[in-house]
Image (tube, rainbow, N blue to C red; front, side, top):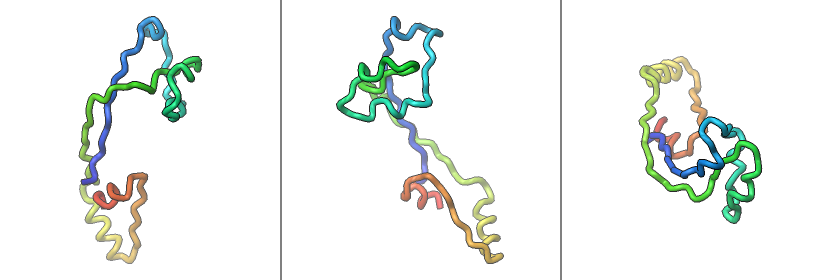
Length: 101
């Protein structure tokens, strides 16, 4: 139905390793951690700014309605009437893009 879905997970960080206010979490390179299922946090814990990306507990999913802006349908119709070919560019999955279109 063209909705966005966010997943939420939890992991309790050991206070001794991550004291409040003294640890800078690096979110720029997190996608490189934990991609290998045979890997553990010990394999990348020495890198500065890391945090565990293994053994998280799924808390739940939230669905968000993200409708097109008001008036988009009329703008598309006007463009088509003027002979303009309208193309939608998206990074969404094909089924999501089709539902939005």
